[in-house]
View 1 (cartoon, rainbow, N blue to C red):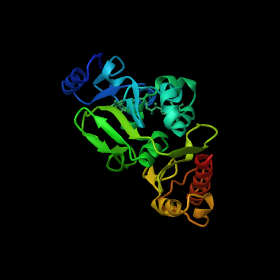
View 2: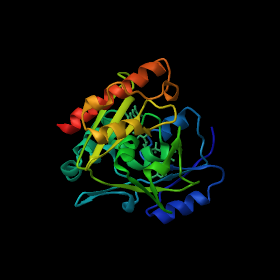
View 3: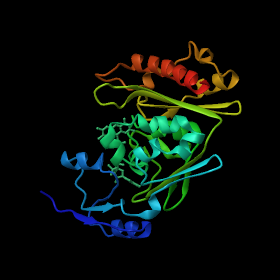
View 4: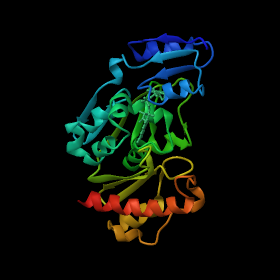
Length: 267
Ligand SMILES: Cc1cc2nc3c(=O)[nH]c(=O)nc-3n(C[C@H](O)[C@H](O)[C@H](O)COP(=O)(O)OP(=O)(O)OC[C@H]3O[C@@H](n4cnc5c(N)ncnc54)[C@H](O)[C@@H]3O)c2cc1C
């Protein structure tokens, strides 16, 4: 057994204040979908839990024109069922529908995913493909500068993800090749097209977490057809290789899944 304190702030400033007073490591608690199992497994033993679920400023979705803003406390279910987001970026609501299972979607949050940066998390692929922005209680960070490596982000100690935002592109789609047991992505690809500019975000496959596949972006910006990336592959050495699939298999998946996402985005 270990001692832990539980705090329930109602503002972002109060949350940041509490965690600063923690003896030993303090942790923000959002949906608890990752943190609670980690604590049960004794992989984390925070001295203080600061519950973010009762902070009104972390809630809510707003869409103004094509600008989408999603609070850090918004659940995957809320994203999946948002008619406002669906109207401008249906690929993004589809992505949220594919996260985990109903329990995970009702509890898990945008802020938790973005802070945790699991190598198979779905949202990072889309945020990279959108050129999205991560908002914190201290600053704004572009997605390209935010997702740094395996479970590694640009967040500083105790920084809070307050929201994400992005400009909905002209067309976009997400394709996910799931591990049938865990439902996590073996490879998930978000393709986004703005004018002729195409961006490709890949998750689940890379050994450093989600990444942009720039060679595919160049080929698809020249010709937005699945066949434009025939024969293109990502470097195998950069892929995850585990009991679920070899590096070679995952590299192959990235091309196939990207081609499916392009066909989906084209309707
Ligand atoms: C069975 C299962 C299946 C899943 N399948 C998928 C899947 O298919 N795709 C997918 O993308 N994810 C999946 N997940 C993960 C799920 O999306 C979680 O929502 C996600 O890991 C984040 O959890 P959370 O929001 O509950 O945050 P928590 O578990 O509460 O927190 C996670 C971490 O982020 C920190 N944190 C939380 N919120 C903030 C914040 N606002 N600012 C700063 N730090 C913060 C916490 O301190 C903690 O370190 C799955 C989870 C489970 C249990």
